[in-house]
Image (cartoon, rainbow, N blue to C red; front, side):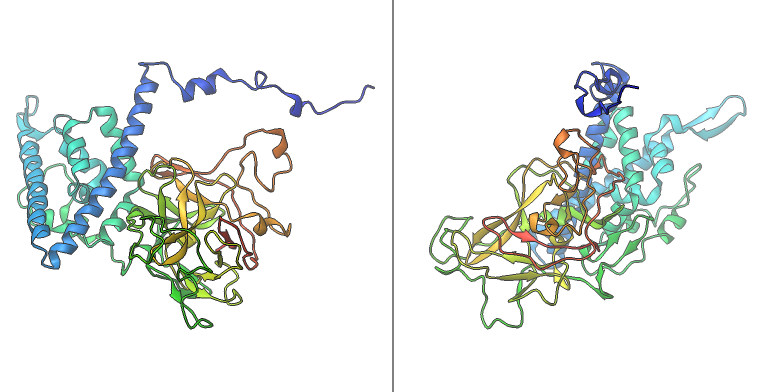
Length: 453
């Protein structure tokens, strides 16, 4: 009997070509599938704009509450436009009353009114929250039935995320509908919607994680809640900030202004407002983008407690290297207790971001920067570095064709990757190690060590 052999590795791209799969990705121009694909794309972009508008509304509201005159004027305009939209929608809804010739009585017909259909589809809560955004109001008036249907589906899929996003920014959506009077035939109960408002104490948006079972939880480490800070703090073991700019820590000019002298530059990033913490299957807490980002965008700075060693933190430490010098590492940035959203980035062998050492203002920091264009609702990922996997005790199962733990990666056979596209979380099987070691000194790129949370 002739010996058999495995021919899978010798298969050509033509052998694996599937015209049906290709047609799903690139449907014929003008076909219903192509039109729906376009609608799905614009629905995701519109949903991203809804988050952006909610955050903008919140920013002006905060400044108005601080008696900023310009913000107070803007808020008067924003509230007025929102109220006018709801009043116009109610008016059109009431005009949809028609006479049923068979029964001889008046009825409200859903097919004649988008407001009626929208409230029935996504409820009063989502309708009232989204009504505060220009993106939703414009789509309500201008979107065709495909785009509008896709958008409502996206809103439903992300209802908890949207509600928490609005709630964490103190948006009082109930005031828009709770005083509505008169009969509302065919519509859900406003009182029930108001009574179901989210009851969740929020002191910072990133003190909440959206769980896989559709709930909320506080991020914690070893039984203690993790808190958000905006910049690193000097820990025990240092009398001065070890990252302060000097000849020993940086030979580069400020990345923001180019100055080699002392300057007061800081990274003014709003990315933290446009990401959220989400649980991912097999990975635990991760970071989901709510907006699109361009390649080379500096998203934020990795912050935490600056320590001379990482003995107290075997999960989150990042080595802070000098900028442009060959000196020893400056410190460890430990964020197991205090840090920002960047500590929750999960590993990927094909990451969307990377660590970079930069001099910004009077300090040397490690930034998180996009290595490619990032879509809204993608999971943001980063490469933890070769040292994390060098012990051989950890196995990455991200599924990418060049996965560091994939013995068949040399064959070049692509595997399914994990991502969040179109506002819907897709399942994946990426796993992180159970035990982490201290970070080692990196060169230009930072090195991070991290274990499964």
